[in-house]
Image (cartoon, rainbow, N blue to C red; front, side, top):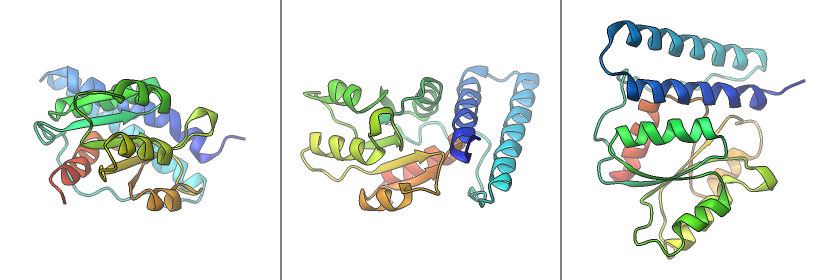
Length: 197
């Protein structure tokens, strides 16, 4: 029987695809209304998963319905997620907020992209679990090492808060956010780190 994490993963991918659509839609009121309905249905599904597994639904801070444009203007964000749909959605959301995004599917990809790069990331956004046993903590450690030990702010996205992720994220000095997460909430957290808050 699938666990909460197994059910949240495709839900996170669907949510990121909705964010990707939002970035591409324009101002068509019918399409925007349909997208809002899709977001509400995805939220209900997430709440249903939480209820079925006896987990508390994270309370998202009040936010505007759209990702704030320019909130990450000038920031370079390293996005590391092995799910193609999630990674593409994250790229679109962050680029729409003004960030320059370097995206990788895992630890080796991130290392290959950033080893010897002229500019290193200002922020890290990573998944928690990767195939082969790697974790978001491994990604954070690698990117901080490439940044000559600089304490790059990091946000870890995970579909599972019941395992070791909270403790390990604390050890990695990273903020933990549970998937699915809205683009606006994610951008707000990254922008707070970018501004040093």
